[in-house]
Every structure is written in structure tokens, then in C-alpha cells.
Amino acid sequence: MTALRWPHGARAACAFTFDLDAETLWLARGVTEPVALSQGAFGVLEALPRILGLLRQADLVASFFVPAWVAEHCPDAVAAIVAAGHEVGCHGDVHERVSDLDEAAEEKILVRSLDVLTRVAGSRPVGYRAPAWQLSGRTLELLARHGFEYSSNMMDRLQPYLHPVTEGRRLVEIPVSWVLDDAPFFLFTGQRTIQPPGPVLQGWLTELDGITEVAGVTTFTFHPQLIGRPSRFACLRELVDHARHTPKLWVARLDQIAAHARAELG
Ligand code: ZN
Image (cartoon, rainbow, N blue to C red; front, side, top):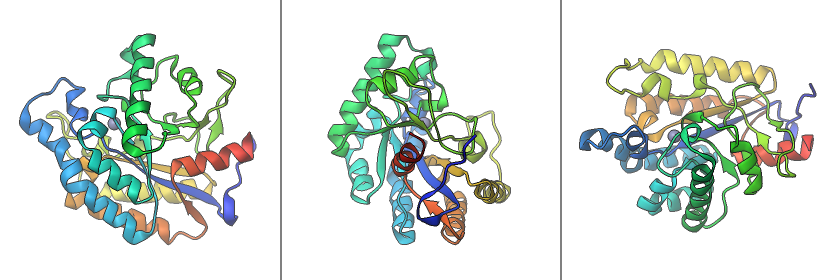
């Protein structure tokens, strides 16, 4: 397999991505109880401004995946993300599981999320991340049909790659992993234990160094409502510092990485 070369003499890439699920993380589980929902609100009210502040101080740009429901309920949050130079990508409507939907429902939600985000963010999204990283057998074809540039859902590689041609267009895939996600460690649903942040940070740092060694892309996926708690925000700050001080590491938005990958591989 041909290895992807990175721009500007970089040896690897790293992306900080945030899924701004807010209340939809809970609504999608059928939860309507106010205290549970307030955990989602924390992501927008308390966490997002601090995350934007950290990224500004570090002079880094990031990608935010926003459900249409969240964009409609919190347009100021989306405006703040866009004003800071970050990317906004599609992430369902109310965080519904795509794998549970029939084709008509899946396409309707995709079109609605494109319309809402285009209106609220002021430009058309080019990236798609499925809620809970669950695709249907049709998702990639639908993304190609509706003009997306990339998907950030698969867990099979450490470097971006091109999907086979669908609907006359090849989608770029920017791979992810549950290991690089905060939810498996920090999302408390009543059954799962809460992990101490220190060992989780150590794992993330080791992943970043290891993926950098093999010229891959480290795609961190964080949820403001989880990573925004002070004990975990300290982990995020250390990760950002570590990434910035890693020589020849290109820290970029996923749309920038996708454009580069398409130019190199297409
Ligand atoms: Zn999500």
C-alpha cells in the first residue's frame, strides 16, 4: 500500500475533533429526564467556550461535528466555532443511529442536516461523521451522492485513504478509533464506571507518538460535555501542548486533511 506523504515536510498528522452532541446524546437514548439532559447542556454552556479558548491560545484549528438539532437550538455556539476558523461537519439530526434507519429516512436526515448546517454555519459542510460511528450499507453512497468530500468513521487504517468509486465520486476516509475517543472512558450512563483521567491521557499520548512514528493521522474525538470537566480538560490541554511540540506534526482540520489526501491519492 502506498504511504501518503504529508505537506510542508511533516511526517504525520493530528486532528482534534469534537462532537457537539449536547442533549441529543441523551435524547437519542430515549432519555428526557432533566438532570440527564443537563449534562448535555454543560457541553455548550461551560465546555465549548473553554475549548475554543484553548484552541485559540494554541493557535490550532479543529473540526466540530454538530447534529442539526443542536445547530438549531444553539446557533450562537455554531457561530462561535465558525468565527474562530474551525470546521463544522454533519452528525445526524437528533443523533439517531443510522444503522437503524431505512433508506428514505437516512437520506432525509442527511439532507436536513446539510440544509440546517449550511444555513447556521454559513457554508456547506464537506465532512460526515455518523452518530456513534454506525453506518448503514448505503451511507457512503449517500454521502457521495450529496457531494461530501470525506467520511471520518472507519477504524481499519492509520492513514487516510480513498473509498472505491460510488456515484461517480471517491470519498476520502479519515480513520478514527474508540481508543482515541473520550466516551468509552468518561461517558457515565449509570452502569459504566468513570475512569481516572491520568491513565487515559497516558494512553492517548502513547497513541499519538505511535501513530506519528508510522506517518499516520491521529484523529482524536472528544465530546465537550465529557472532556470539558476540569479534570479531563487538563488532559486536553496536555495533549494539545504535546501535539504542538511534536516536531513535524501537521495539526489540521479534517477538511484540510481530506483535501490533501485527495490531491495526493486521487
Ligand atoms: Zn455524537
